[in-house]
Each structure stands twice: as C-alpha cells, then as structure tokens.
View (cartoon, rainbow, N blue to C red):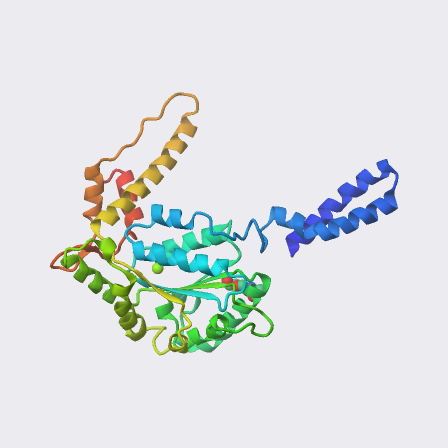
Length: 354
Ligand SMILES: *[C@@H]1O[C@H](CO)[C@@H](O)[C@H](O)[C@H]1NC(C)=O
Ligand SMILES: [Mg+2]
C-alpha cells in the first residue's frame, strides 16, 4: 500500500514537468494521469512483488532438476512432489487446495524440499510475501491459547488468500500444534468452491513433522537388509508405515478431523539418510562455501594475482561424515541427524580446528 502510492506521487511530477514543453498541460496531464492510474499497478509491480507473473510462476521451472541435483537419497519424494504440484498447477480450477504432508526423521530434507517448492512457485522463493511459514514451537507454543491460535490462523489464511490465491502455507512441527488447532485449517483445504466468497483452491499447504519417521525407517531398514537397492523402494512399500505413523503416533494429526476426511492429498515419506548421502551433502556444502570464500579472497586481493585455493580430500569428507551419529546399533546405516549438522561440521573444518 505504502510503496504503491509513494511511487505514484514520485512519477506524477515528472510528467507534469514535461508537459508545458509540449503545450498541452491540461489535456496532457489528464491523459497521462489516467494512463498512470490504469498502469499504476503494472508500474508498481515492476518494482515490488505482486500476485502475478513473473513473481508467480505458472509452470514450476526447474523443480524436478533442482530437487534431483540438491536433495539426496529421496527418490520417492522427488517423484511425488513434482507430480502432485505439476498436476495442481495445470488445473484451471482445482477441486481443492493442494495439501502435502511431509514425514520423516530430522535432517532428511523436509524443509529443504519446501524451499525448492517455494522457489519454483515464486520468483522470490521463501522470501516471497506469499509464503507463510509457521513453526508450532514459535508461533503456537501454548496449549491453553489454542482458541486464539485458531482464530488467528483463520484470519491469516483468509487475509492472505484474498490478496493472493496462490499463497503457500507451511506448517512446520505440525505434530506440536496444540490439540484441535489443526481443525481451524480444515475449511480452507476442503472441497468448497468458496468460503465466505473467497476461493482457496489454488493455494498450497505443506504440513511438516517427524511423525511416522520411526516406521519409515523400519521399512527402509527391512528393505536394506533384504539386499535390494534403495531406489527400488516405492510409495506402496511406505504406505503402511505412513498409515500407522501419521495416524497413530501422538501429535497434532492424531484424531484430527483433517485426517478422517482425507483432506491431505499426499503423505510424503522422507527416507532416513545413509552415510553416502551425508557425504554428498558435505561435499555440496563444502564446494559452496569454498566458492564463496574464494570469491571474497579474490575480491580482497584485487589485481594482485591468484588466490591460493583451499582444498579438501575424500578423506576429509569421510572423517566429517564419521563424526555423525548412526543407527540402529546393529547396522549403523542411518544418520540420526541426516544432513542437518553438516554446516557446523564444515564451520569447524574451515576454521582448521579439525
Ligand atoms: C498474512 O499472514 C501473516 C502471517 O504469515 C499475518 O501476519 C498477516 O496478518 C496476514 N495478512 C493478512 C492480510 O491477513
Ligand atoms: Mg524441521
């Protein structure tokens, strides 16, 4: 609001100054004025984010490639996330808001995948004003305030979807949501053409939790012990784990009306990561960090010549990966924190207190 009227006021004097030269001050100003009014929104949208292209992207550019390049060990996730989003975006009139529920151990990439989804939906990615990211422990911490939370959530969703029907809502730690709060979201993801004349069906909701992670890991372990390649695990293998985990573990989804009515379109299983995936994360993060350091060093050195490159070896990556914890005790194949603590490891490595 502020930025649009500010911009308008800035532009008008410029046109008025030009006008006397052409001799038609009154007519000219009126004409320019109306052109300005009608194109005001277009001009504003050149400088700040609006709910339209190019800020809102229609065809999810690069989603699958980005996921494949950056998210390690999650072939089921990549496949299902890409397919369900593409299907949703293709529909002129989706029957309901797309609702994805992410499940799995910490560090398996749930937030990471959410950020790629945001990037493919919005030019500004996670920074877009149309992305709303809630953490239960921060935004909805108190059981006794659940009534207030319900009211706020409904106002926010209504307000934001009114402004942009393609809004993305991410509810992180949804298993820690106070009892019953999740029901406040239900009307917005249900099969209604509109609620109070607002149409919510083009929006996307993502629920994130560790719920079901134990059962997903159990299924993955069983598959691993049978000697079959991880990539042969399918959604069907995971379905049972998701059914038992997502529905019956204690937490926000338990007994929620949301689940009984199957308003969640897809439950998405994030597999526990193996050491080989942790090493991929370490390598990617190291390369990224070294590139940044090199560029900074090159800038500081100016024209004085080349900057000595910091290097790392396969053994460095190994030893970093070995600092992680693995489970279960008998096989130690899964990283208990996935790729989550990789950044800290690399901090230590780069500070050379390795
Ligand atoms: C949109 O959601 C945010 C929370 O992410 C909230 O603070 C804001 O008030 C909402 N906007 C409207 C217009 O309701
Ligand atoms: Mg998380």
